[in-house]
Image (cartoon, rainbow, N blue to C red; front, side, top):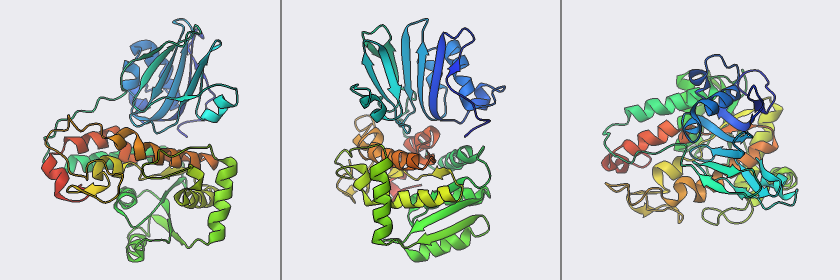
Length: 375
């Protein structure tokens, strides 16, 4: 969605390196000022910096596969939270990679998932020797900042970079009466970025939704849907027939993703958005896992909270808590990705911007624990 339509794979001049990727590299202009599309920077960065350093330079949401035929290796790279699915398999023919594991299973292969925050090198000689090369981002666990102003600036920048190159009329979000989607909309309004906000009447505070519609009325088209059982059933059928199968981890949700009513609600919104020509979805996913832990002051609001939202003065013994990278983080990210993918919509996650999360980790425990979902 960035720059002109660009075919893949990206090839080195001697065709010894081939790169394919899914997602967005938000800092590609800083890394390659002459590049017209974000994917064009990858071959040059890889040949200049090698692994794992080239992956650590990338600010974005991405899954990258590099075939280096001269070195006889494949390099698989996931962003810090693995926002874009990436599966792979090995056999006597070499290394196979795909966004959806069903593509590999259809070839009779045993698919595996690249973990979040990973640079992985695999030999192409048929031996399937794997060499983990470390993370794409090393989180700093010091807690020393006593105000949230830099987090707020980082969050605004995270929203801005995710819509910077979007065509007019592309941006939308699912708006609840909660903190997370509300923060995204507030950032969009603050930068006067037109967008559509779709809400589903369920357990939402209608008064808050009305206030948000009024607050954003010069910037946003706001729509509130009251879904019938038939609406949800039709969305459920679409997901069962078209969505990539995904099994929840059994923490926050049970069973298959397409049986989750929240997935059906999201599918309804995505269908409407796509019909209206909107293809860039800003998601609030990740805030509960990185900021609140589904709890506050030691009290678990939901049973899958890892530590009741009470941050210790030393993060070393806690980090990464289960849902920071995996658990509900993985479940809900894959729900967003699989549902959006059915409709050809790209999902982006400002709360999982690496700078946003790092700024939050840098806040002192007292600041983190002072209010629910501070900042």
